[in-house]
Image 1 (cartoon, rainbow, N blue to C red):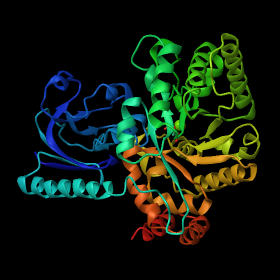
Image 2: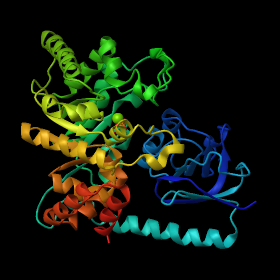
Image 3: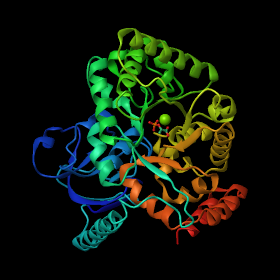
Image 4: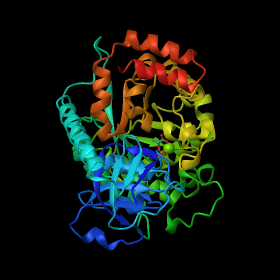
Length: 449
Ligand code: PEP
Ligand code: MG
């Protein structure tokens, strides 16, 4: 039975192929490329996929900024999610499926004319990507000479080449937790050192921001015996675990410090909500430094220390936090969910997950102003940084460091290169005066045309 279902487009691109429906895993060893269909995929399941075999993914549950969606984007696999309850007859293994990751549409057993139509769109998409490739080696500079550094968000050093191919200037967010997943004990200091060193050496003089372990939420880890929680995103997560489990934390900090002797590494703490947490984290960092000094192991004494601003509480005390650190990186994925009380994983309220909500924009503006007043660096590393519609906001606020999924870089670069700061300031002024999502979307869409 032919079906057309509207879901959420979470990774752009068009895929046409035969479905394989979980929980049958064996096909991944077959050479035949397929469209993967699953109720939900965890980030660690995605780590094991061979991207060459997966044309597209259909996930019944999940949100656009879930870590699985972020990984699919990093791998360039078209993804539609949030179809739960919308499909009248379940997709069967072997069904022909079209995944339209841009508009969030899935066609099941479509007629030949629909397939032909999508084949044309798929080719056009590939052609557009080829066009964008022409600017990857050019700088991200506005028409009036404002330079923006576009870094890559990576989850493993395997992604460094994809970052290069898309013109990334260093790594603006290394999500280290994936190194800890799918195993029965945490990675040793030596193992981590090798990985961080590889990133530092690969990026040469370009910076690599290593974020310390951010588990919990949608990234569980069996061997840490994390408790079952009703609200995992509001629970035992990230820096909260690290300040509790100092053995785990210090091992990571030692590895980061040792790698800092070999390249421009920076360290960043996630999920900060108070000045006390930053001071506690820095104090453990100092302990790690003291140990290394004693052992005669080299490290960068001036290792820059930053924090993620991803909880509204942190944004509201950004002026105080700025006194403690060298840089901020605004994590819009969590900032949006916590500000709007909208679970980033919940497809039922996905339409309410709005990075351009005036409350989010005000918190971002306040954070940037506090950083600038304190004279520290500020960048953005949530998925919003990879949305070309947000470019006028960053340029108007004077944010010159953005980090995103590598594949978003060329599109954002193109948007920067056709803008002027003056014009962006005018757009942003109207945006900040607008009270509704609709008004803001119209303003931001207009500047793209
Ligand atoms: C964020 O919250 O914006 C962020 C970059 O961190 P993560 O998506 O890994 O939670
Ligand atoms: Mg986050």
